[in-house]
Amino acid sequence: MRLNSPQINIILKACNKASRSLIRDFGEIEKLQVSSKGPGDFVSSADKRTEKTIINELQKAHPDYGIITEESGIINKSNTKNRYVIDPIDGTNNFLNGIPHFAISIGYEENNEIKCGVIFDPIKNEMFCAEKGQGAFLNNSRIRVSKKKKLENALLVTGGPKHDSKIKKQIFSEFINISDVSFSSVRKFGSAALDIAYVACGRFDGYWQREINYWDIAAGVIILKEAGGYVDFFDKDEMAPLKRNILASNSNIHEELSKLVIKKNIE
Image (cartoon, rainbow, N blue to C red):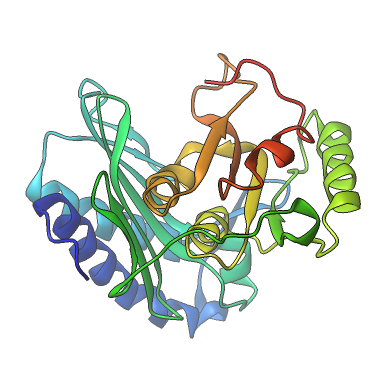
């Protein structure tokens, strides 16, 4: 890994420590305690254990920093200047069904701007990381977004909608419109963090999703930007500050792709 700042090293240490028990849990899925947070939305003892390990490691270094995390909510709410944004297992449904496509995602932000991020796929041993102004890396290799120039040749990825979404028709309409243009079709892999990481390293050419949680994409945004990608947040919902609508791709297809996603109030 070429990035070596103190903040990156803290996050990498947390990822590596948490991943050891996560890999073990993946081999013993039937033994995990699983509860439902809502229709199609589950949390396992592995999520909670992984999150606890990450939080403990981060707080050893910075006990006063704020933390936004999927399972525990917001920790140290008064500190909004320095915050970690954590998803202990992005792709929980994949994990619980024995599908080896999930990741630990940790971003670090200062004054509401993501400064660095790490996405770690422990099964494939792929560590995506980036720091503002320092580039993006997959393990020890520099990564860049793809160079595809036409949307019709692009391989895209998306997610959602969730069971309780109130805009399902809009989401499906966008999916159909984009699928009609992209001859390579659209994939849905079940992990937003890895979706963005795959755009960053050129495996996918673009990604979009509505109603995604901030912790799912925080680390991915800085990785994609440092890899040369473009990111738009759009249709912001003031009543749901930790939800995002995101469009991310290489620079060549970004404008054409954005025209197919109904957008207003781009941040």
